Length: 159
Image (tube, rainbow, N blue to C red; front, side, top):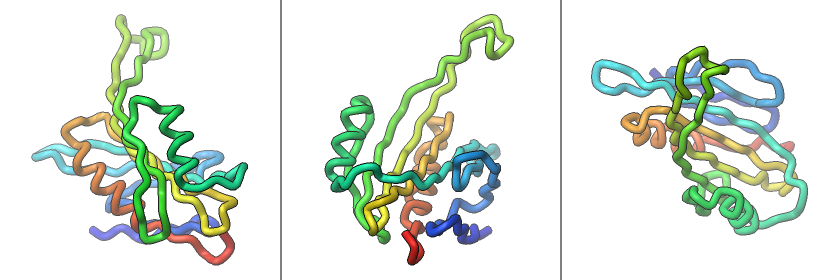
C-alpha cells in the first residue's frame, strides 16, 4: 500500500503507509502507523508541526541548542532533499504513577524516537517531525519510515 502526499499549509510530506491521522490542536499532522513484527504489528506515532524560528540561526546553532537541552540524545546535522536539518535520536521511558493508570505500581513505558528539525528556506519557520515507538524490536523499521517521511518533506512557495 502506498501512502499519499499530505499538504498542510506550505509543507508537504508523505507519511508511512497505513498512517491514520488524528486531528489535534496546534499540530499540523498527528497520527499513528504500524510496522510488521513477524505475525504481529507494533504501533508508532508521527507528529509534524511548523514552528516559527524566533531568531536568525544557522542549522549548526540549532544543533548545538538541541544537543545542550538533550545531552543523552544523538544530535547531528544531515542533508535532506529540502535542505540541511537537525536530527535528534533519543531513547528513554515514561513513568506513569498508579494514580494515573489505576494500577497498583508505576507503569514504565519505553520510548525510542527521532525528531527532525528542518528550517524553511525563508529562515522564519522550522518543520518539526517527531516519530516514536515503545517497541525496541520495531525501532529499526520505525526509523526507516521516519527517514523516508523526512526525505519526502518539501516546502511550497509561501514558506
